Length: 122
Image (cartoon, rainbow, N blue to C red; front, side, top):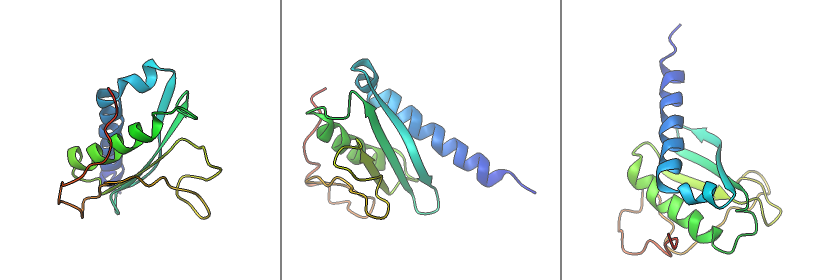
């Protein structure tokens, strides 16, 4: 029995984690956290939860947008990013959950690059 699919999932998870650390160190510096909630390699979809000080932070919508727009560009296997702070009473895009939507939200299918929406101020 091969462990290749598990190794590929672990590699992708590590690259997503490193992406968050490299591109968004201010999340942790400001008392927040970012964690992978779900990773679906087959569909190229990842769910990220921002917690700690990110919950209720006024710039968390811009941080979420920046994560969504940059991750699909930098990690080829990722087609869609769901990110949430847990505010709004929803889950992570599951049944009945709320998934934030922002102007210029990017997925791998949208290569126009015309509008990436607001950028985080850091």
